Image (tube, rainbow, N blue to C red):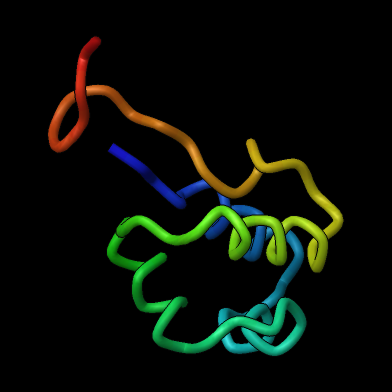
Length: 72
């Protein structure tokens, strides 16, 4: 299962709001809603977020085994 929990923690650490992230990264609020529901988004969106926050992808997304994921 995809989780964007690292992103939310990063925003808290940087005292940045979600709408501020949208503006800085140039992403739509509908994309923000997908992130909030741990839904899949395009890799290009994750790239925009990483570039805007000057961070690594591991600081934005993680893969959790179990519910909704595959255990291959």
